Length: 164
Image 1 (cartoon, rainbow, N blue to C red):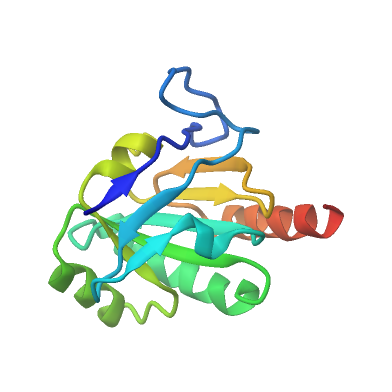
Image 2 (image 1 turned 90 degrees about the vertical axis):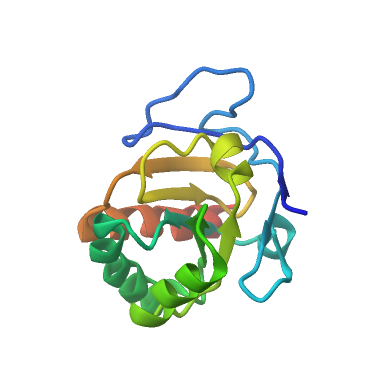
């Protein structure tokens, strides 16, 4: 059974959305539990103590397909310092696996049946969520990130970890 705790939402340029069930930037990101494409659990505990980039996507999303190569390149540069997780938004295993295979996604993906999107406040895909090594939400970017913005965000997560 998929379950997910309420986590957070921040606007695309770190603006805050006030809602009692949604955490805000600067607050701890609660735990999540998602299903892996091979049936195992993917949990936030796996990523404890590491900066984490979560990218919410869908196979049908053209912008997601354009953005994915940027994420794949960034993963190549940051994989030793930042964990990456792709979250397929409400599609089946076959579509998520095909997306990952077709775009050579080297990092783990997980499947959301809707709980993750509801608790994180995902409203537009692609959406990139950034959590620092202490588990604090640092940003949510709705829509496609530019390569420069992605680089800046990842550099900030790595620098923040080094300062912790």
